[in-house]
Image (cartoon, rainbow over all chains, first blue to last red; front, side, top):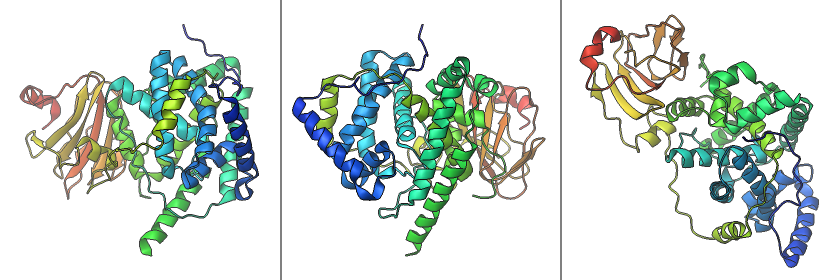
Length: 220
Length: 211
C-alpha cells in the first residue's frame, strides 16, 4: 500500500552536482535573487520569468532542481514505477522550457503550472493518447507586469499552503488523494473541499487583464 | 462569453484537474473551459491546490543521466505541432479530436445527426445535430452525462441551455431536452459507460429515443 503522509522536502535531496556547477549555480542564483524589478516575487516565479523572457538556463536549472524531485515523488506516490516517473518528469520538465512563453504569473503559480503539465503528461502516457485540454490563451509578446497582481496571487497561495498544514491528518490525506487523482468525482463531491474562492477571484482578475491586453493588440 | 448560465460543477473541475475523469468527460470540460473564463479561473484555482500538494510532496532524487538528458535537449530543435484553434462553433479540443476536419455526420432519422468523436470502455463523446423543435436523442443514459451547447439552444426540466451552457445529468434525472425553434442545435455530449448507441441498433432503440 502507498502511504500519504506529508513530508517537507529538503532541497538537499536532489540530483548530484559537480562542485564547479554548484559554485556557478550559487553565484547565479544570487544574481537572480537580487535582480531589481522582480525581487518581491517568489524565487520560483523569478526563475520562471527569466526562463520565459531570457531563456536563462541557470534559472531553468534552479527550477529543475526544485520541481523534478518533487514531481518524481508525486508520481511514485500515485503508483508509478521509478522508471515511469522519471520518463514523465523528463517530458514535463522539457515542456516547462518549451512552453515557457505561455506562462502568465498573473493567473498561475509556477507550482500549479508545473503540476498541470506533469498531470497532463501522466494521463497521456496512461491512456496512450492525448488528453483533451482547454485552448491555450495567447500571451502577448510584450506585456507590462502588474506586480501587485502577481504578489497578490502568491500571497493567496501562501495562505492556501498554510490552510493545508492546519488541516487534520485525515482531511489533509483526503486532499492529497483527490489531487493525486485517486478519488472518483463522486467521492470528491462528498469528501473534499478547500477554500479556493479568493484565489479564483485573483486569477479571474489576471484573466480579465489578459483579455484586455489581447483586445488592445488586435486593435492596433 | 458573459451569457453562460450553466457551468461545470466544482467537483468535476477538481476531478478534471486531478485527472480522475475519462477522456469523454475531459473533452466536454476542456471545451466548456475554452468558452468560459469563469470556469477557466475556477479550474486554475484547483491547479493551485494541486501545485500546493506538489510542493508538500516528499522529493525523490532524480537520476543524473535524466537531468543531463533534459539539459542537452534544451537546445535541440523541437518539432511539436501547434495546437489547433477553435473553428466555427467548434472549440479547440473538439477541433483537435476532429483532426481539423469538419465532422462526419451520421444520420439518425428525423433530421438528427451524430458524429462520435471517441468511444471506449469508460465512456463516449459525440457531436449531436438536432433540428429546431426536435427532441435530443437519449444517448445511453447510465452514470454521468454532460451536454454542452455549441450552437442554438435546448430546453428541458433543468432549464434553458444556450451556447456555452453545460447540462449535468445522471441516471437519477429523467429529462427530455427539446431543441429550440430556429437554427439547429449542435451539442457536445459525453456519457459514462460503454457505447450503448451505435449505427447497428438505432432501429431497436428508437422507441426509447423519441426520434
